[in-house]
Image (tube, rainbow over all chains, first blue to last red; front, side, top):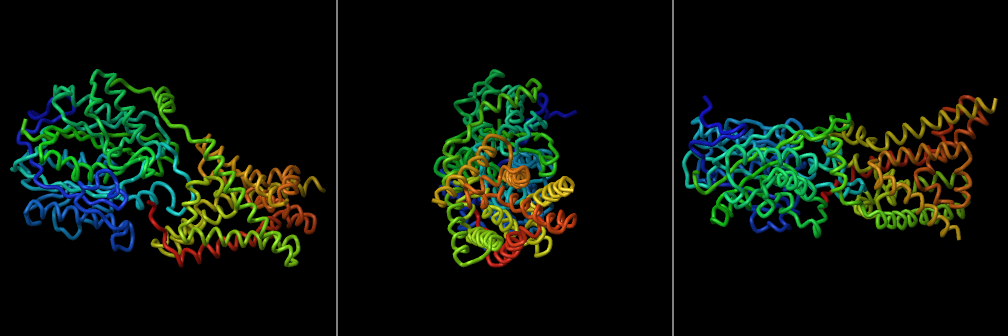
Length: 339
Length: 147
Length: 118
């Protein structure tokens, strides 16, 4: 009997794990954005002393994990699992980041939804009594994503207005079976939703239906009202995707407009930083959550937040073969109370 | 949530997309494209005055412009120009050079055979395939008609 | 005077490329391929030669000009060498530019490293 399951897609955690520390690292461009004061570390350049961008991405993920553990005043030996993922083929950034840590590791791929995916699975592991301490982490890097999914950096092409800017950043959160909060109280796991968008330069529109689906389902399953939340924040829908998701959710009878925003919109000043529709990538919701939202929860500016990381589950092969882009969105409720 | 009709959704999304600034982009393309071509004319005249024959002039001009396109790509200026100029810097032969140098540089870390040399032609390869391919077809037709 | 003509004709060809990219889903690679191929075809049917006569570098520097050289080269080679010219003409006429692109491309990739965008 799945006693912790409520509704169709949601789990209410009996012993909500506490997020006892976080750490966020971002690139120079993100460190020049509106949230710069909240990030724990800002890189001077996009290589951070490494030979390749891939190495750099791996390095910032490794550093984020180590620093989050250190901030929790734990030794690495006490951490029982790392759940991590990224955007690169075969998730090399994550696997290479943990190869020197000696901590059991689950590699996850949910595209840009991976941060909420790792928090979901991590909190279920702890609630189930399988671990006392674990780390959830993800990363992305503008230059590694650009060369894998799009064009060489020096190619003189133009970015369409719907395109988004992959965030260079990593975030790690340490979850513990005991602690003073904030707690992860609910997990709503998303379905893959494909609305038939084929334009790889318009990820926001491809992911928006999945985000709306998960958010609506979350309210149905939990019975929460909009007022129960201080903030509902999606991962990287960008300006266009956020607008679409908001319309869908409003149409379903939930007017969340007052407390709804998107990590990809918050992290950049789109006008000044020329990021078109906003930020994207695993590192977007990871750095915004671990850097910004966690701190606001800690100082009680926010008391209950719904974080919905959104992912576009396509590959360069599938796009070239004319397949549409399926989207996914995972939601976790993070609250200062265990309820 | 109800099932989404892909066709309706695509139409709905189209309405949400901000239109590219056609006029501004076209003016930039016209201006930069025009300047590059004017500069090309200057090089043509320069080689003409040096006394090269017609074929020599066109080859020398192409080589010079390709060098400049490659060099400015290396310096990291060409992508900045391209961000504004769009087709104005893509369509001239300097843009062809940019399309060769940019992946070659980008994939240097994957080695000099499968990185630099193989990736060089990600954009330029199709141009050569269709360019030479169509020239053979056109030549063949010309040969048959002439006979 | 030839400078002004080159500016206007070259600018207009680039505007066509820009409108193709903005108005459709074509990527720069698609536009380059389309332009080279149409340069070959337009030259073959006699349309591009007059444009070159007016525009000079304005018509030869943009990529349709590459197609123009290909077609002109192949015609010349067929006239001189017959059937074998069908295969040699295009390469001969454009050898300089393409070899230069490969050579300089390689050299530049040795000297320079790509920089991140800001």
